Amino acid sequence: MAEQRRWCGRTGRARAWSALAAVATGALAAVVPPAGAASAGTVGAPTQTASFDTVGEHPFTVPLGVTLIHVVAIGGRGGVGYKPGGRGARVEADVRVSPGSTIYAEVGSDGANATFAKNAPGPGGANGGQPGGGWSEGLDAENVGAPPVSGAGGGGASDLQTCPIASCQPIDLGSGALLLVAAGGGGAGGASGGGDAGTPIGSDAAPAGTVWDIEVGTGATDTSSGSNYVRIAYKGPDAHCTGDWGQSFGGGGGGGGYYCGGGGSSVDLGGGGGGGSSYAPAGARYALATDAPKVTITYETAFRIAPASRSSLTLDGAGGAVTQQAPSGASSQLWRLVPQGSLYQIVNLASGQCVTTFGDAGGQLFLWPCWPVPQNLWQLPANFGAAANGSLIWNPAFDLYVDVYGGSTTAGGAIDAQPYNGGYADQYYLTFPG
Image 1 (cartoon, rainbow, N blue to C red):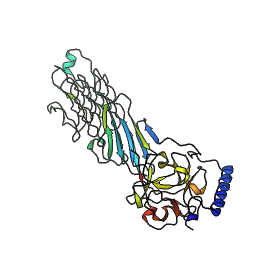
Image 2: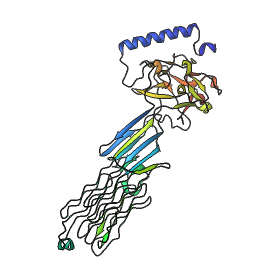
Image 3: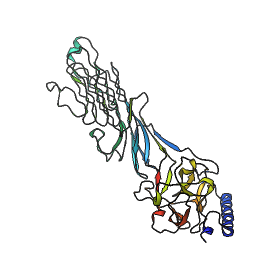
Image 4: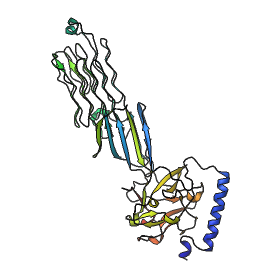
């Protein structure tokens, strides 16, 4: 009896195989495969990329089975004036995420350039960039015939976070909701350039040479915002992360970031703003950016499936039958998910075929062309790949669950379909190669 329930059983299994082929053939005659469905002999790319380059907020739902994403974020540059603005940061890192959750890519923008007019500071870039200071009186500048110029805005940060802007803490308060931040550069002041964004610590604005009474914004750190040397006699208290305007050329605005850069200030000629600081998990790579602000997310779509009853083994589709084997690096041990409405096909990376059941309890699972038939459509929980005790894989058409035949814990054991029994043989983990 046991042998009849295994791969390629005898007469009964042959009849079931013929019936499945007939059902599949009829389905193909009446149904066009849904978009994204794999076909026999073809396999999609093992990674996918989502790229956001439009300023603003972009929700991203983490696909089932994905627990780690690779993120590249680029912050905005500071606006320019007579001097250059600070460059934005480029941050690249792997970030842990929860399958099925929604995260938010926030794309910043460059700070506005200096405006050559009184009291017209350049606005800061989206997502934390601070405005420059407005040129006001400038008696000394007027005496020497210098033209007026208000400060340029600081560049905005680009980041990835766990909640939308409307409900998250401000970008510049070091919120625990931030998963990765690429800071913006400081805006230029009348007499000095803006500081570069953090890699990960922000840079101070450029020195103003021998010009009298110039206060440049300092760069932010991983624990505090930048500042400037406040001259209380000439202006009000220094606000966190703002570009303070002096009485002549305006100061540059601070760059946005995990913490923001300090704004420039002056009595007569404005200093540049400091760069914001960046943030990412351990192992991140930081650099100064040459591209426009954006956030790019790349994630693996191929993974191993390990039974909870013996997590050191992995499902293998070599030869067309699904078994559990020791990990070998073979592509027959890698799988990806293809959504079909609310259900999924489980596609083998080596063959491009789908995990399929005959619909009989105890029948070994096998690989079959990915036709849109109930035999190869599976329901997965929203946290598939992240559940501490493993996840169930259920075929709703036949009310059967992916199972290790007989609860075997040895390599070569068959993977079959069974009614739910609550054992470890019904639970599965995801692991990623490498």
